[in-house]
Image 1 (cartoon, rainbow, N blue to C red):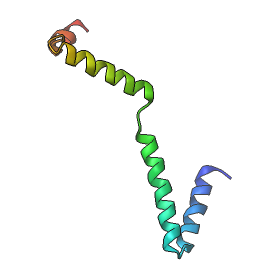
Image 2 (cartoon, rainbow, N blue to C red):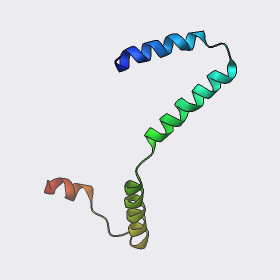
Image 3 (cartoon, rainbow, N blue to C red):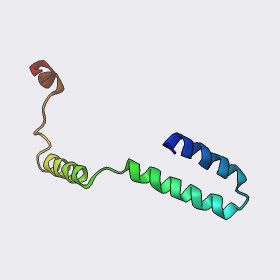
Image 4 (cartoon, one colour):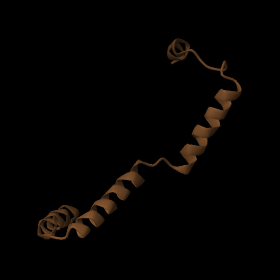
Length: 72
């Protein structure tokens, strides 16, 4: 069974649910999945931390956007 068919079948089963606690549990699972997809990787977090530290140590060490744009 392909993913689209499985989704359709799952939706049909959702309509049969009559227990609040089951719906709450399913909503928690979906929320957790969404949050996990939004997370950035550890490598990206480290790079962001590195760049933030570098900026804080020397905030004047920046490039002008117009200069960068003209070089490209």
